[in-house]
Every structure is written in C-alpha cells, then in structure tokens.
Length: 193
Ligand code: AMP
Image (cartoon, rainbow, N blue to C red; front, side, top):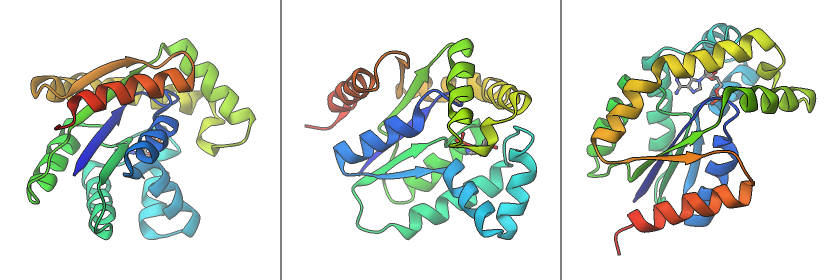
C-alpha cells in the first residue's frame, strides 16, 4: 500500500496535485474538505456541524474529522493506497492517522508539503473565488483566517513528519506539470524497489 499525505495552506495546489498523484500511482484521492462540502450539500448532521467552523475559516474539530476520514478509508477495499489531501492538519490528526494505518500494518510513505508565499495564495484564492469554484473562497476575511489556521498548526505537524524522516518540502509555485514531476520524482525515490 502507498499512502501519501499532502500538506500546505489553502490555495497551495493540494487538490490538483493530489488528483495527479492519485492518477499516476493508481491511488484513491481523499480530501476531507471535499467530504465536508459533500455533507454540507446533503445537509447531514455532520455537514451542519462542519459548516459552522468552515464558514469562519476555522478547522473542524479533530475527532469529527478523523472519524469521517477513517470511515472513508474503511469504505475503500482492494485499493493500492490513498493520497490524503488536507488531512492531517493537526498533530492529533497525524498521530490518529498513523495509529489507524498501523492497525493494518501500513504507514505514510511521504508527507509532501507544498510551500507557497501568502501573497500568491491570496491571489490564487481570489481567482478561484472569481471563477466561482468554492464558496468559502469568496470572503477575504475567511480566506485570511483559513491561512492563519493552517500556520497555527503547521509547526508541530511538519515537525512530526520531519522527525519520522517523512517530510518533503516542495516549492508550490511554477507550472502544475513541473510541480507534479517533482512530486513524482520524490515518491519514486521513496518507493520500495
Ligand atoms: P480544504 O478543502 O482542504 O481547503 O478544506 C476546507 C475547510 O474544511 C477547511 O478550511 C476546514 O474548515 C475544513 N477541513 C478540511 N480538512 C480538515 C481537517 N483535516 N481538519 C479540520 N478541518 C478541516
């Protein structure tokens, strides 16, 4: 099994790159943000709970997020692995993911951290808002709060993976193809031969 984690602030390109990695390696792409948006669309209890946090640019509590993620992983049988996009976002989530994967003798192969300067993130998120792709990109204050929420939790999260020799920081600016190629080179090197 190959399990990859994509880290990075909102607008860093995690979704795009996660999709490409999943296609390249034949993995399942799991985005907790997309799962929450799906729940909100269906007006489930979880969706209503999550919306309260997402509308303010805050993180949904760890337990709700982790339970939802585990449930999604468990629904996929006979897969080669997962690309986790936007999960984990906190140290508690990273540790819960490791414990969960460990139950089936698996682990995270690499945590790929996309680094993009705040000014570029804001420009990308404003563009995404103009294109109408994401409702949570339309409020400038919420965008800034989401970026702040990421950096508030980033240091211990990155430290967790660095300490386990899993962290790879990648410049998330430049062409989408060049970034994908860079990520694939890193993952290829990490794959068992
Ligand atoms: P994303 O699509 O990854 O940008 O996530 C959109 C929003 O969903 C975030 O701003 C959070 O409010 C929530 N969210 C997504 N993933 C997580 C997570 N791992 N932990 C907590 N909240 C999350």
